[in-house]
Length: 121
Image (cartoon, rainbow, N blue to C red; front, side, top):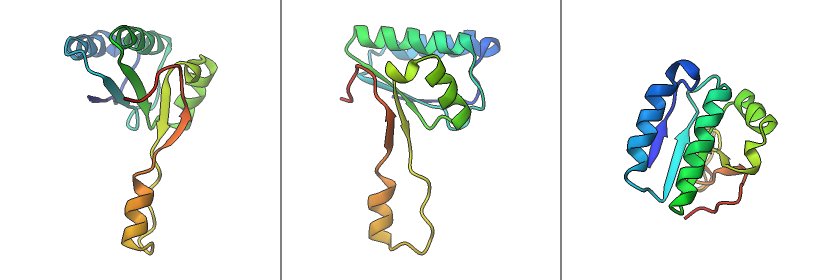
């Protein structure tokens, strides 16, 4: 399951928490939080991500953070979440002069920049 997040801070925490609560009732094996459209997270958001991670781990699920911007990567690193959560960065789009077969191969390989105790299922 995937959640695309554009804001994740104290102001939107009740709504975000409700979405994750409903999602977790489905007992997914993996939840991907796409942060590519999110410019900032705060301490409350970090707490929510840790709670979702803990709840998923309780059902043998995995939380993956995808495509955070460099500022959010630094925040996650400072909070040491990069030691707990999987954080992946998708490769940038390739220039149009790359042959199609190579483009398809390269575009499917995300970069794992941090990997916690969980493993991808």
